[in-house]
Every structure is written in C-alpha cells, then in structure tokens.
Length: 148
Length: 362
Image 1: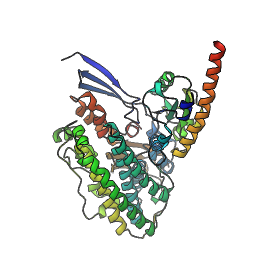
Image 2: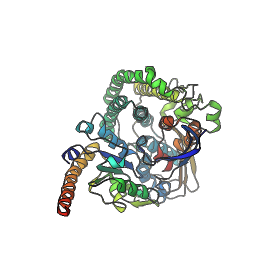
Image 3: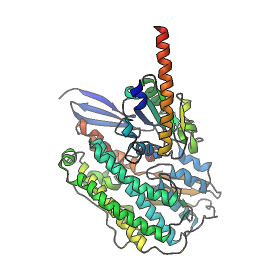
Image 4: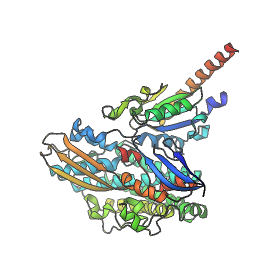
C-alpha cells in the first residue's frame, strides 16, 4: 500500500458547481502547482481512483451519479469536498434544486472550503486525505489478518 | 452496415470537467444520432432574485459560471443599470472591458488546453495552463481573486487599477504574447494537430445561421456576429473592431478563430489602456428599479452572445432575471456537428464548441 499512499490517483466529479472549483482542481494538477510530479494523477476510472474530489452541491439529478461513482471505487477510499458548495451548499444553499453539501449523499472525509477553493487548499486537503487513506488501509489489513 | 448500438457518454467522463450526458447511437464506428441529456448542474439560481436584492445578486450572477464569472457579473450589472438609468463613468467602463478581455484570454487558453488534452497532446495542455496562470496572477493582483473576481458593482467597479499598474499589465501581456506565439505555432502549424482536426465536425454557414449559433463556434462557420461590434461601454471607443472569421467550419477553424481572438483581446486591452480617462470608478447605486421597468442586454462572453433580461417590481428585489447563455444555444449545433462523425472524434467535436454546462443549466 505504500506506493498508493504516496501517489494516490484522484477522480474528479463536478456536482453542481459553477466550474470555479473544477478549474482550480485542474490548476492544482498543471505546471504552477504541479501535483503530478508526486505521481498524483487525475483518472477517469473510478476503479483506479483512491481519492474522490467532488465540487459543487448535490441536487436531485446528480445524487445518483455521485453515489454510483463512490460505490464503484474500491476500498480504501477517501472523499474530499472541494469548495464551500460541496461542504454545505454555499451561496446556492437555498436554491430550490439544491439538496445540500456532498455529505448528504456520501460520507465525506475532508472538507476544503473556499469560493472558489484555492489550489493550495485542495493540495492541503489531499495531503490530509493521504493520512486518512493510510489509516483506512491499515484498518483493512488488520481486519483481513484477523479474518485469516 | 452493422446494427445500431447506443453508447452512453458521461455524465462523468475524463474529457469533460463537467457533467453532460449524451446517448450516442452508433453504427460500427459512425455516430448516426446524438441525444443530449442535461440538468446535472441545475441549481435554479434565476429564482434567487426573489431572496437576494439587486446588489447581493451580483455575487450570485458571478457564480453562474466560474470561467466567465466576470462576464456574468458585468452583463447583470449593465442590465440593472439600464433598468434604473444609472450612468457609469468612462473609466469604470474601460476597466470592466479590460477585465472582461483578460477573462476571455484566460478562458480561451483554458479551452485550448482542454482541446489539446482531448486530442491527446498532453504537453500542449500543460503549456496552455501554465500560460493561463500568468493571467490569473494579474487577476489576483488587481482584485484579490483567481477565478471569482467580485470587481463589479451596480454603478461602477469596486476597485481602481492605477495607471502604473495598467502599464505593467500591458507589459506583462506583451511578454505573454511571445510565449503564446510558441504555443500557437503548435496548434496552427503542427501537422499532427491538423490531421486530427481538419474536416472534423463540419458545420456550414447556412446550418450555423439556421441553428442560431453564437460566438467563436459560429464565427468559424463564417457568421459575422460578435456582440463587441455593437460598441457598448468601453467597446464603443475602439478605433476598429472586426470579428475574426473563418469559412472552413470544421474543428480546426474553431481552434484558429480562438487562437486569433486571444491576440485580438491583447490588442483591445492595449488600446484601452493607452486612452483610459480619469473620471472616477463610480459608486454603488442607491436607486431601486421601478415597478414594471424592463431592460435587456447582450454581451459577448468568451463562448458567444449571452442575453440578459431583467424586470423590476418597485422593491430592491428584481421581479424576474433571465439569462440565455451561449452554450444552451450552441448545443443544437454540437448535436448537428456530431451526426455522422467517427466515434473517436466525439470528444474533439464536443470540446470545440467550448461547452460550459454550468452556464447552460444555471
């Protein structure tokens, strides 16, 4: 597991964000912030991903998509809510089609606030997520040992 | 001919940062029909005008879309100013145009990067985004934000840019221009890019006009329409403004049109900085819109014409706010351009309309 915990692959899904956070997620991967140099790669396949970056709030239409992506990811997995809309609904919290933050759909491990979330905050959250990923994988390994 | 098969595309797809679902009906490798499904980002923010007053709503309008955020706050502010008959000082109008053109440069560079990623040129994607960060630095220095700027208020702008700072921005843009030429060279002169894009996703001028296409997507099919020609605000003082056109109508033409528009924006900023007046930046209007007053406005966003409509009801809240965004116009053309294409060209064609789904669904 050590290779995974040092270079987790991320998957990004845009809930109902305004794009501001999405382009900041991509900006974190591109040359100025460049997390790709640590082997953190944005993948399109949930089965390859360790960390799920969700931007934007949950609404009636996308709640099933978010749950589906989360279910397709293999354990251990970490969910990072990027931006204030993903944390709580943000400025759109009282729009009629917004249910609320991502935690209304799936369990969230790390909250990265900001409108739009800054790339530094995303990197911070992912680093925090790596710690949680390690704990989760240790717990999984212990459970497996106990079972065997 | 094989049997028709339906391939679902999206809502979560690596080529698009945003959710858009398409049912692609294919026969062998050829797409014969495309059925789009949208609504994944619908928040219903037009209805928020009932809960937020005209000054608060500017921050909501800005968050319609994070890429053209400045454009939306500008379009909304201009509409409400029309509604109340507010005069905006010339300097504020010039500053608005300067920020708006900077957003266009950042948006086009962002798009060129994503476009390069769609045809598998990862290094070019990284270079476009590296250059884009330099524009974001200018935003951060002048407004404090990277993508959400909050620089406009109803009646003017929140912050002035000092003259010395404006000249520094022009210097910076001239520096960016040199590096931009190198990137453009890869887009416009590289045969591998051309072999991937020439003749792909063709849309004729008649089709583009019949489907009411807007923005660079239409201009690449030789439709000479750019809202900047109407000369509203600071655009009215430009010596000479000609929309950039191409008559080829394929994906390659769309890349070339956008590539040229970046340079055009740099020239616009340069010209406006050279003649910016000093009559103040305006202050937040204290008026409220009259009952039954109506105003509409069009603005050229990076993706094309955006239409705004507002109706007052005598209180500090608007009665109705309506936007019609360029992507919701262009989706029809995208579906048309996709029909009959190869399956492998689908990501390229989708990206060349520069879809902004969060604008489209609001």
